Length: 191
Image (cartoon, rainbow, N blue to C red; front, side, top):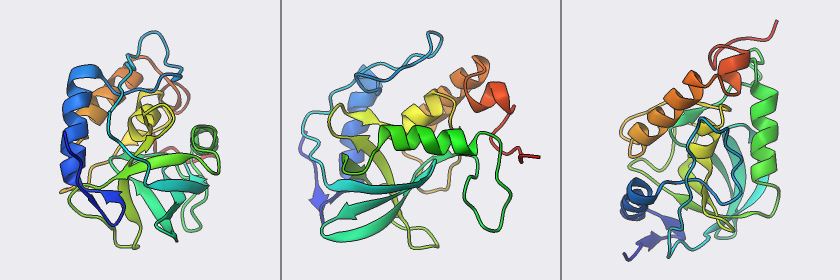
């Protein structure tokens, strides 16, 4: 499948191609450490070309990436991790753990492929993307959910992987992985 690249960011056409691969082969990375009860199969989305480099992880679902010579705040689509740095909201149970886990997955300098859905930006002008780690094709959004570091959060029309993410969240919840076993759900304030 040929991928459409505009301004060095993959568009929904690429996401559709990736979804065909994910639907038939799975979506975890080669070194993803899944619990035995959670299936995190591997995929090799041939043709995905890195289009960004991680500069910094902000929290469990937001990073700063270098894209085409500029720095972009990137919000991972379809997921929500507990708050760990919000100024106007309390820090939540498992927020620090989610942030630390994302930092372990995406250290500074990590090459990634950012895939856009229907709306490229949110109200805060953050780029909205599905993130694929380049060296092993790990679908970061899905891994965070499958390992219990994030719940799902859909904002239409950016719902291309909603069913896939919801299924992973259901398995993580049933297995009491991560925040599900410690906090019960993603929105529990620390006391």
